[in-house]
Image (cartoon, rainbow over all chains, first blue to last red; front, side, top):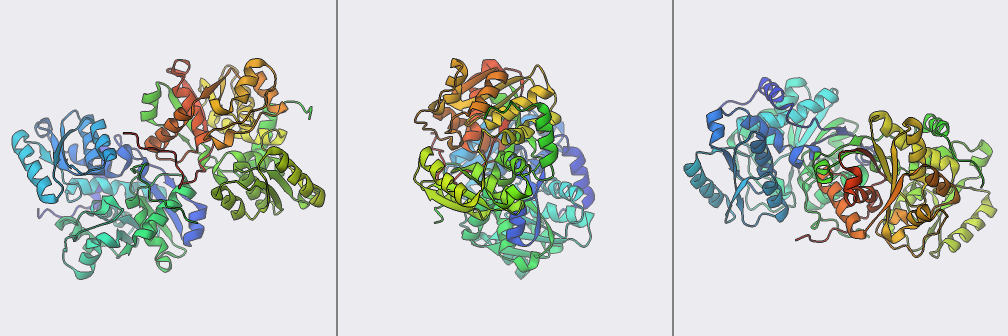
Length: 320
Length: 320
């Protein structure tokens, strides 16, 4: 657990390892959103990544470093979201079993995604304790290797490859911003970006209703999230010790956003860019739009983290 | 009205004329939709075009051929949809006035788009007669030049530039398919495609609930649409004499699709490709999925015509 912080070389190695397995996603811009924001925004579209989110990068990188013997016993995690689907596909491609513990209140859409990749799902009562206990039993019975969604060294290195590609495509960015939940994405983003460009500003964006990263960053010690309640369902989790250390070391600031701003930003992305972004992915744009003075006239890279939404339960209310 | 059919050279000229005004939209593929369809599909993403649809190509090409004197009197059309927004933006960029007659039952979203580009809107009662009468009065008062949404020679040449770009990017297509309403898009597509590749198959796709092009094509004479009623709101109009002649000359077949299939295809595009496609744009994929034997193992170009939808009124019902 006291493993050191990944270096840029670790991200580079991860990129070599996974680059023929992941999509090199496009970087999109929108004249209309630039006009609205007063900044020049470059969206790294991980909603187009395999399984619909950046999570596949980290899962692939973690699994590719397991030995044949480790792989033969299967891998697993507890997750109700994108990490579960990503791990399931990575396991399928490496021809091993994925054991996924899901809370029995997970949405049908997430369940379908995990089933689609032929993972073995074990249902449990909601709550972190129940999930960990359920996975512990599976681990004992199978020897399956547990892959943490965000606190894993190799997962973090994999997530950093998105920012690396973005800076390869747009080298003269002034700043980079990514949403923060468990912190794997923004940690990898920070390591990659600072490794490639010393003076780049690194920001994270978080829902105010799940603001443990913001509080931890400001207070200087790790504060777990307390009863999170946000539409950004990918950002409900707490930082891990490792991601907290990375964020404390590299980040210039963390911004929080309201639920209303998240939905507005999400709608802006859908209407102006004609692409699906999930609420968690819209949090970064929401932060930019509520902190215009910080980003004014700057070239800003935005990690658009994913596009997995339930089309039957969209948050767009009549605006008139 | 008896003007000849455009040639491939006309489309080439249109492309030179508008290429610095329009987006060269990307061609996207989806491994998952290819698996579902049994074909290899290449989506030309005109949902990413300026104003959210291919219509901007035709509007730009038509306006760029007006003289300074003609332009000074303004341009106009009657339309409740994408052609209105496209003409409004093209007029704005050429610094002239756009007069748009809209039926007073047009959706707020379409109204906002036209207003956004600062066009002058005149409201009228629904119905083609009312729209034509309202525009006639405006034309008499202003001298504004009327641009037909689909039956205009220059509009057709502009719309053909999407297929030209698609075939430049993917030269070895076996077939091309586009949705058909007034027929401007599929006419331009056919002229461009046959000009670049003699043996390519040209198809159009139409909602069964607005199947005038299908009936006209099969019967060999122009049959106007009778009480169309489809979710594909861009395809409610009838062919014009010019587009009927082009379609009769170039098309291999026209397929019709049910409303249910249109919504299913639209959902497939949203969920698997993470992009917004409007119902009219999904009609081509719907036709492919209901005629698998025609497209099996073929490389097929699909013109994804637009992405303008009302996010508050989506047709995705619970599937469970």
